[in-house]
Structures are given as C-alpha cells and as structure tokens.
Length: 185
Image 1 (cartoon, helix red, strand yellow):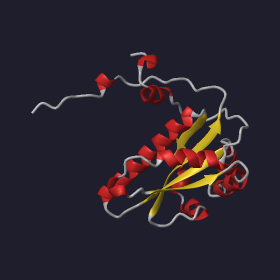
Image 2 (cartoon, rainbow, N blue to C red; image 1 turned 180 degrees about the vertical axis):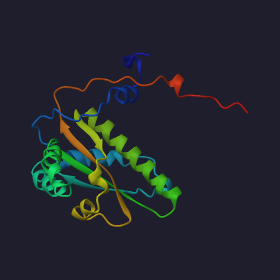
Image 3 (cartoon, rainbow, N blue to C red; image 1 turned 90 degrees about the vertical axis):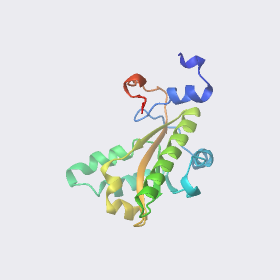
C-alpha cells in the first residue's frame, strides 16, 4: 500500500528516518524538547513506573560536555569522539531506573524504548532530526559520573538532535512474510 493511502500515524512511522549528519545551524531549544517529551512520556509503562529521566545538553553546553566525555576514551580516540559529540545541535540523554527484578528491568526498558519512539515520531513531525546512539561511552562509569547517574540507573542512549535540510534516504525493510509465522497447535 502506498504511504499516501495510510493513516497519518502510519505515514509518519514509515517516513521517519534516523538523522545522523547534515544538521543545520538552527538551535534546538529546550522548550521544544520539553514540549515533545510532554507527549512522548504517554508511552505504555508497566505499573505506571515511568522509569525515565532526561538530561538536555544544548548547543551552548555541548563543547564542554563533548570534551569531558571524549576524555573517557584513549588518547588516540579523544579528538574523534569530541568532534562526533559536537555534530548534533543538542543531545538528550535518556536514563532508566534499573530494578533488581529481571522482569521489571525488561518492562522498564520496553517502556523507555516506546517513549523514545514516541519522541522520535513527534520530533520528525516538526522536522527535528533524531538518532538514538548507544556508543561505548554510555556504559562508562566515568560518563555516568559526569552526568550524575546513580548506581541503580542506566544510560539508555544519547539522543542526537538537529534540524536538517536533506532527508536521509529510505532503507528497505525485510518483508513481513519473512518474519511472520502462525502457531498451529
């Protein structure tokens, strides 16, 4: 079915792309991110735990943040990582509460992932590019310290944000027929 014949939500799900590069100089405002999050946090969440919290790093604070994070890498990688972290116009760090029970941990991760997808779709609707990054630094205890992330929390990702002029190319999906089976008992 053509995207034009889909509902608005189905169309935006199919049109959304990961915007990794090519950001314009337009500043990503804190107010915009907060407005998007106000709707995104309506994601499904087991037991209404709402296991997320956020740290916003705007363009003005990105250079010092990128420098600190890059210093957690080996000297030969520091310049590369600093430049990489300065590419977006802002970063939203998404943090999750980590319960001890595996079931609750998985429920929390599912809820946070759903919330990120909501945020991404809402941002796309406003021509704000998003990409969810899970680079090695999100697992580094020194980065958790820089961000004041507690021992019972996990950095789920750095969400790179920026406005863009050129939409990334669409990539094909594996056919549903290759991924779908029916259980017959």
